[in-house]
Image 1 (cartoon, rainbow, N blue to C red):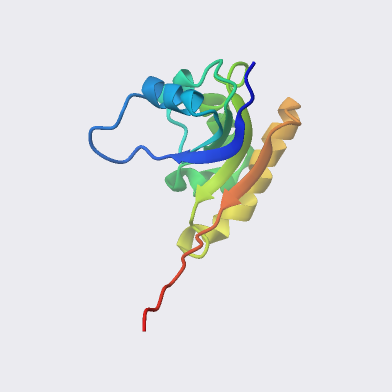
Image 2 (tube, helix red, strand yellow):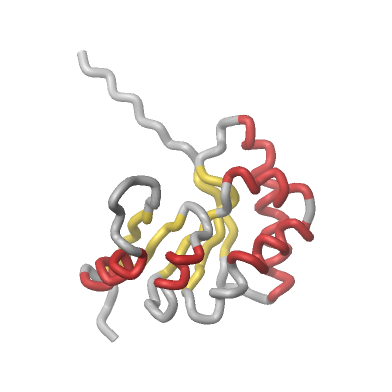
Length: 144
């Protein structure tokens, strides 16, 4: 197998006239991009990633963060719905609790959501999956 670059690219899916998930995966493969971030668990994108070998950081939906934080059972339900069907043939390496919600109103749910997701990952014995979050890092430029 040809070496992939140790480079990751976010796969945003909000827009018009976007290429199909299959075309996006082919593009990543053509340019040997080895890592991809999905901001939420899109089943079509995950299906296209089957067997690709691309390392995937898979996000939770911000609107699900409070529920995931509320109980391990809620986190397990989300995991069973969005991750488990793909885990055997998609290289999911990270799960993120929320996307750029710290700082913000949803920020209070990040740590308990991460803890519940980690409990689910541990419960299944998926030691290769790490749980993390994505923090807003705005840069302000001042031109004098």
